Length: 393
Image 1 (spheres, rainbow, N blue to C red):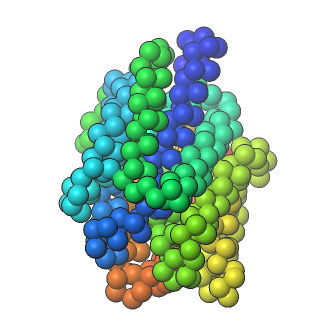
Image 2: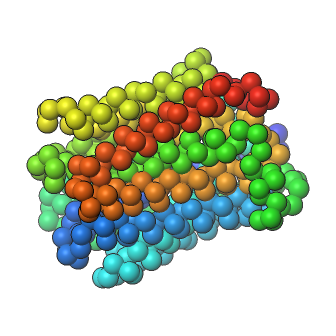
């Protein structure tokens, strides 16, 4: 792809990918700081709130699977334009509608847009910067982290000015429209020819060798990251007694750590190795969550520090898979990100349900279990890495 595109085109497309991931992080992580206000306004419990969040990741799950096949057949521009359109309609609905069911439907549409964002920019970066994809995927993830970090700060600032949580979401529409206008005139390189796939071909193509373990790892990781990001503000306010301002600052710190960690990650993972880097990161995250949950109250700030260790897991898994498998890569990445979407469904929903049954402190501890299982899956991949030809471990 890179040989068929001018340098200017590559720069513009790369900028479009970075902008998409900033919008991805910003939009996705407005839900955490606005969740307490939404629960209060609608007079609903943690479980119902978890169901509303569940709808977003069902949409995400569906989109990641469908968009992989769409990208292989029709190109990545269609996928990215659809992402912007879904966000436009979803954010408009979520900031205006009044019932839990309609809010859930709106988050479902938002999830469709975010799922398309998960596949589109990652696949395009792999195509444009194949030799340095680990570096560029991590740099692109920095923009996701920056958007994620700014979202709670922006929401907290608007709350301090007495704006409603709905108004917070309406500001996001400006970014969505700007993205669509930026993307529309760009000329995408012609999609490389690949064998035509349908849904019946996916098990044969996308579940060979060690791929199922990669899917398991990314599912567990996203479950933990989204679980922390979605419920950290509520946990700190309801369990630790933190203020609205301090709890939103903690969430911002979490995403700040995600961003900070990704800056040197592209260089770190090439020196240490993809799977070894993920292994070390999972250990660090496990320790931070355990200290934040079970240590004295003043150590609760270890929870947002978890973001430093979470920071490069997702893009590094993506780089590892794209190194090992090249044929029908968009479809394989689509399945990979579908499992990521499944993780996004599992984490927030499971925390909400367990919190209703046993209390929020116990529910939030689900993140500890998910991170421990992630560590186990990486150990399995490390032991079997020599069997997967081309995997850079």
